[in-house]
Length: 538
Image (cartoon, rainbow, N blue to C red):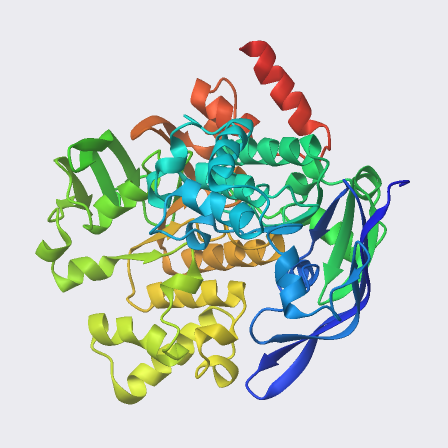
């Protein structure tokens, strides 16, 4: 690389606090980034990726402190710089794009107002000039109606559109460096392609350097010039992207490449009365139909994967099954008997039979309750357990999800990793002893190693208790691993459904083919070839 060095980090050490104890979580990491270069930073949860990325801005999140090393950004020592100097760089010369755009935008302000804030505050341009620039960048990011989309509030655009709007906002001051922190992790495959292509193009157009943090190797292969692998705060290896993909040197890196090999054994065709049947359901938000005459069955001991892009109706179907959204026509049957359409009309026993595990364990678990309370409440409410019987049940559930009760029962959610929090979500659902568990994108925010552990756990519990799963996901690798049957949804309709083997065997319905073709491959040229093919096809 002959370009000038933009960022040089040497011997970076960072500590994290748990209670009164400080523990080193980044252990002497070195990093060099040249102007216009993209570095992929990968590793499992707890590897230190986001912590290193934030340190590149001279920043440590609450509960962390930088204790050693140097951080040199274009000749500026960020560790020795004053907070005023660092603030002057952030947003102007160094920008950050977070994983969850929905959680990062201010819901009370329109997109264009939030775009204009940084260039105006940093004196880069006037408010009027910034507003015109926003329209130009929205167009470059291929956002719909670029002249007017900025006047919407964050909740009025889709997740993929919001992620692109955040990338445009990060570019507003034309920074020299952008930190992308898992920017496509929570997006469906078709939206992920749009966002990934937009990110790659905008970085190239402005010759911006970037650190791209992710646990998805196939995604980072499309964007990065080089890849650095981290494990528990230490560097494992680093190489140019093609060399790393073709011949990783270290065993840990090789394990990342091979981690998604788990697949449940294929089951015989379903028979008997389904646990839950969705029959001709149409449902609406206000006057707009979001589900149109959908039907599918979920049998005991089987997993039905419901797939489709954002807005296809997957989670809305789950809301109808749980009674949170009464259908305008059609019915949901439990073991052949119609369920009351509304949650309020269902008995406690009917409520007990259908439980949910949510996508974002961070927001699904009350941060002020200890694990014994989080897991114990459903057992107390639905099964009437109390005292010693309740304590025993909570401990049994912790054993089931492979967490030691002696270590974890009195911990708060904030003291757990992402994978551990999701396991608590599983235990909480199991506490009610349901027949059906709805898993709503439960692995989408987790790294591949943790994902595999969660999928294996769910599979074991299903075999042990004969559970029926409705698995809402946009990750077709997850579908291949765990599903028995697949339901493909688009714009509120069921496009195609059947056993997994049939669904992954051509010929496919056009929309199913689109989903399958949008799954990134471990080839740096994959995205380019895909976009060229689609452009040629019109």
